[in-house]
Image (cartoon, rainbow, N blue to C red):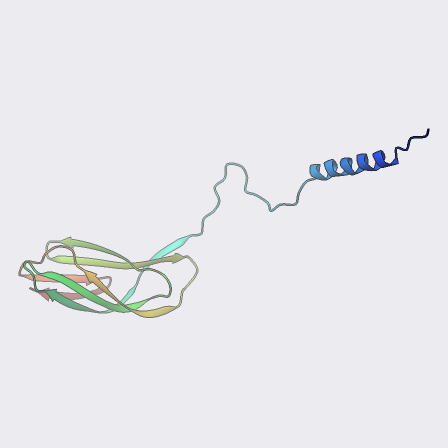
Length: 137
C-alpha cells in the first residue's frame, strides 16, 4: 500500500505561510518617540467687538441691571463672559477662543448679560471690552 503525503505537505505549507505572514511588519504611520507628548493645536483668545450696549434697569431694590450687548463675533464659536466689580466700576469681558492662525468669518451678534449683584443709588462706570458708558441709578 502506498501512502500519499501531498495533501499533508500542502497543509503544512499553508500553515507555515500564515505564520510567516503574521510575523511580517505591518506598515503604520510614524509615531512620536516614547515619552513625548503629542503637540496640541494652539489656541488664541480674543475679545469680541462691541459696538453698543443697552442698559435695562429692573424694578427691584437695590436695582438689578441687565445689559444687551451688540457687536461682531466669530461664526460658530461660543462667547465667554466674565464679570468683575470694583466699587462703582463694572467690567464685563466677552471673549472667544479659536485655533491660532485661523481667522474665522465674523457676524453681528446681540447678547443679554445680567450684571451680578445689586446696584444702590449712585453713578457707575460700565466697561464692556473696549466700550465704556456711564450708568446712574
